[in-house]
Image (cartoon, rainbow, N blue to C red; front, side, top):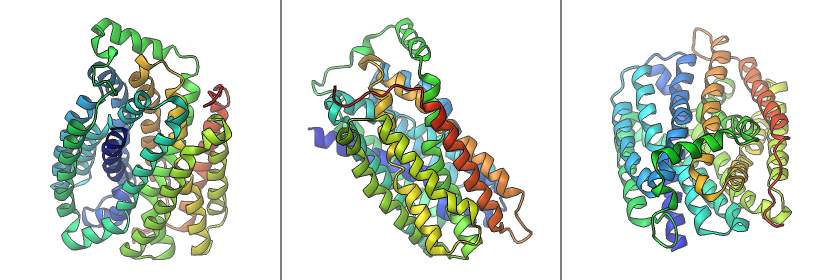
Length: 404
């Protein structure tokens, strides 16, 4: 039964991650066809994450009050509407509205998965199962690479989004028929809370002493990866190295494949070294080190740029360890509210990083639409600074070890 539950949740997160990064390969084509400026493209991509961030606290309330199964299955149908809006958009505002609806459709999937799995497996194994979900997300990222590029070349990006609408229906069905909120099949105790008790639980989460340090880390660790893969890897490879859409897709496919393998390995590291905080700090420093050459050397050869990107994205699965650290810091009855409240910073950070880096590149965009290497150097330098600030705040959070 746990295998079926994990597979259904993993499928949902695969689709969610696909939508998060779906603009990465097609961003240059969207900007050219609809005459979208870089800053506007940053807002289109960031709209998904801003909506996610704003929706996290309501999502947490829903996950605890109605249970993950009902919440995910119902909201996934909103994603169908988002796909239709995106497919019929005639400008950046239409694209952004479609992304907003897609975000609502996906808002409960990851935190609902973490909350559900925490009730199915013992704490010492939660990191491993979180790694499975993270790996499924890497599959979603892979699908945004060459498969996405080939599909768009075949039926266009509008036709592709009509196809994607069916994925949202499939997620809703998989969660409804394949997932139980806990092994007993009984409703969660939190679903019997009165409205007053629901809000009291949220206030308890907001008074958590390490709320802000956790949120600071969440605001930069995952958002850095998604800003690169979901927004700038396509334009970076096109502007600096002149790569075609298919070749850009192949590069992204390689990088995300490494991220998939990394997620499976990273999910086991907290149990191996008996530390969650140590894994998060160590692998985030790997990301900053990997990005440093790209920030310092605008003329880096393609092989070095790919190596650096593989290093940075290959350890992006560390976010699953951070999610696990958050989950075990709260009691079971506050699982949804605790995870989702802190994850609001994750999505809000993705919006801010997307918008900020879009503004940076916009300052250098030439008449041809291309940006010089210096623009991307500043983007990578900005991301490094954000990561270091997040780690500095996270240092205050106590470790919760998998084993006593």
